[in-house]
Length: 430
Ligand code: SF4
Image (cartoon, rainbow, N blue to C red; front, side, top):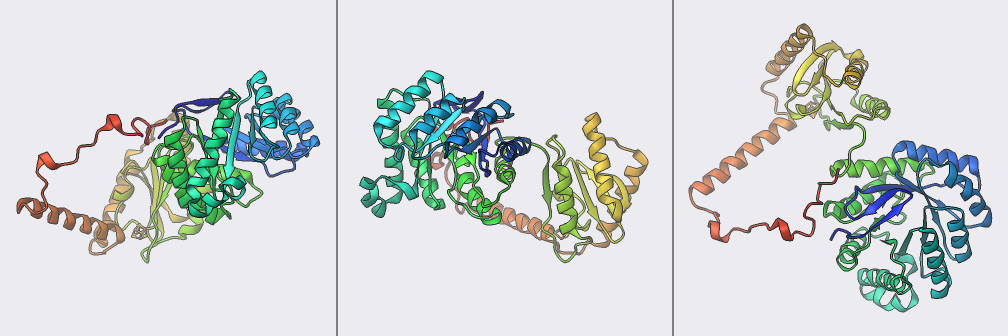
């Protein structure tokens, strides 16, 4: 269930019902200030709320002071094995410390860090990875890896509570997606602390994004998870941030910038969709308004499927149409479609109203009607889906009429929203 408690990382609230926080990690040598600051700024521009930097050496702690001072977003110091680096990172002003209490040199060292963190008001992220479980849990891990992960995390939670330190969030990560899902579900029922979600070593931009979308998306849709990091094998940390945002936008958990929708294309395609969609996606990165933009590969179906889009384009042989919220805006030569689309988006961005020229709109509507009429007999994917839906509805109506499969009202399952573990959280955070 959703976390009750929250931590404050340099002014960014994590947990307690706050919007899911996007974080990433720099891939530079932290001590290389120029490179690290460049990447910090890049990920901040891409929408990271907070960023983590690796601190494996003294020279990284030195650099940390400047990074914390100059960064536009809060900084988390990532520490392993060496608790003195954690102490120094707190002194350097890190907004949060990430450490694994199992590899920092024993409970006394953890206690020292917790005491210093308390003095400075610095929160921590504590966590376990499937690859580094304590020895005494190895037997359980072989039998039940999910229970072993959760047990390790709970042991760390108990240790921190015994030290009277509760200003922390928890992560349990695995390279295995089903185990990550199961372990976080279990942990969220057992502890009230905020959860950091991630899939360890998820992989390349392509496979890692998909694994993360499945694993993290499943948990987030259930209201579990307070901050996410997408781990991708790329030097470009901003790519991780973009993927994180796409997941949050897809679940309608947060809004940021435009949403692009595009048809899957088929044999009726009338223009070079791959290039056009990639071009539009790239150009949309410069916009902040959450406009929905649709790209339809042909006008055979009209614009019904994309009628909710704020702006869209569709094409026929030499001409194309710009449309907006279900209505034609104007007809333009196909090679000018994308530029004309952005001209309309720009006008909207500046005035917050959709500019309509009645004459151009009428011409566009006529053009669309003609294309639809000419192709009225085509069985497009959209029309097939519509026919299927109509057939299913008719079948359901017939069954109801004949009393087949109808559950008497008294036997119907009633959802009790008040006792739902995700009440007020699922898809509701702005
Ligand atoms: S029929 Fe549908 S899927 Fe095929 S190109 Fe046209 S809009 Fe795209």
